[in-house]
Length: 147
View 1 (cartoon, rainbow, N blue to C red):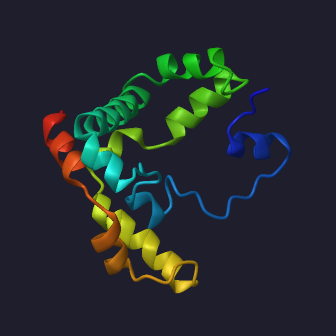
View 2: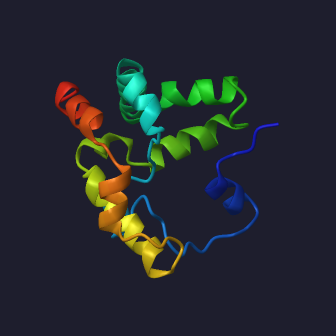
């Protein structure tokens, strides 16, 4: 059984007060909410597949932004969400169209700093970026998929 997205589920249960809404509240709204991760050895062995996955994700974000009504239906039909209205609300509430506006490295720095400040991670944001990120494919696709 699929469940509605969490915010709708909480509202349906009577929770009304929102503490932080990362899609609209600064500073969180100025950064990506989600990331893709892959093992370095996989990316090294499969650069074409890696780029195809990233392209597919970016095109899906474009579809969610440009045609939320059409994108919501497969979520319900596929059993991921029970309610078309909840799926549509989620798609309309999230800034899918803004992926070109955000800086991926700055996003990693922002969230790594938050986690470092509360001792969830030991490495500094600079070390996380240096050791664990590669934005080449994303940057290429950002130029390629320019609107």
